Image 1 (tube, rainbow over the protein chains, first blue to last red):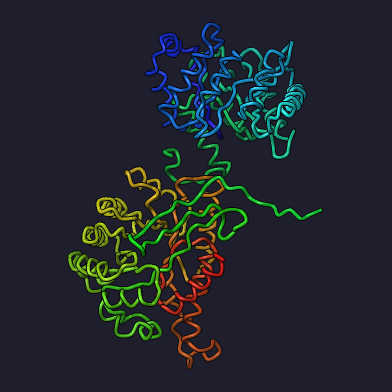
Image 2 (tube, chains in turn cyan, green; image 1 turned 180 degrees about the vertical axis):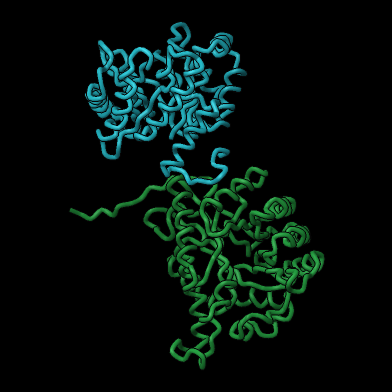
Length: 262
Length: 313
């Protein structure tokens, strides 16, 4: 499974301050740590960055790729900043991921950028109005997004469908609907569509000591249904051990007594 | 409608491992698809054929072999030169004389012979212990140091002695042969342990433990297939090392390579039969993905090289 490291997020105080001061060190340290822990992509979330978005993303992409030989997952709602990030990205180690588009019209330009820069893109199955009711609803939205991808020349293998993870503590039935959606998304295309989740949303609002347990068990169920990628914290060893163990049980990785060390 | 050949896409690739130096250096590995599926991937290197030499005379080898080797067998240096002249890609020096149940030669004696053999040939050298895990640690340490700079393959590192044997290979810039007992998971485990002690995974050659035709060959074949599937389809970095098959030692112990014409008239002449036994075992291992073979009979080795040439096209 593809691990997208989530640690460099504007939500974290340390990251927010580093982005504000343009201090590369804290960001680079987080990137290196996630790289070592086995992340395949490093997410860089700068938020809306309304003032200096393009310049900030350009800077962040460059300083991160100075220290990690990995593709990045560019995370901003600012279209201009996204384009600046795509331009700055070094594709030597793989193409970047755009995080994200959805079925909301204001997010359509992200899909245009994916076509223009031949990037991968995460698509939240979220439309205008209310949140999707169930897995079937999510598939309907996914179909519209896939059609838009084709119109923009984005090949299906570059699209990651995200079922939109909602919090368990207030919408208990939605966890299962997201798992069903991951299974159903794959059937929308041959070869199967790729899927991704922002995992930790599932445990939002739950007590701190419960959150990792919810996250890990939810991830196990999602991988079992064929999840291709997850935005998670690769520095959480229990989480990474869960990923490795499920992959071994499912026969995707060969067992060895020290499989957790690899 | 035109027929479209279904193709597998592989995400992994076998490491290239170079042995020896100069014009006669040999590189093995590099495959990016299952063996010889040229329409699915590339095979930059031919499997290499090594002929086996010992530090003692081959008195306990079957007569067919002794006849082929002739007087060269009485001296390891002459024997190694004979192998080189016979067209071998490599020489595999097995330090059998160091085994406590054999001549119990000292590590120093073994190292001296290894250095002499290395100096006498210009094809790459493989240095194998006697298979006595404890004694091999001292023998291989000494032999590795005595052949420093020759870029040899040293082995076999096994579960009981891998730390010392790997350290000897590492300290003297050699490659390492790591053997596990016919088990994919143990093979992976040994490679993980070697990597964890700081040994570069791209300098390991895996020995899945071979056997002879009719004596469990299919187990080796099946283990090799699973190793390759993990390496290529699952992109498992611990399984992407080239594979060596040590077949001569197995083949020349079975009845089919020893029973005389008089004993088994319905089996055909001994010499043809014995050579066929080793070359057919070799071809099976080649098609299963062996990157390197250790053989004993120059005639059978020549046959194996013919098979390789035809398969490589």
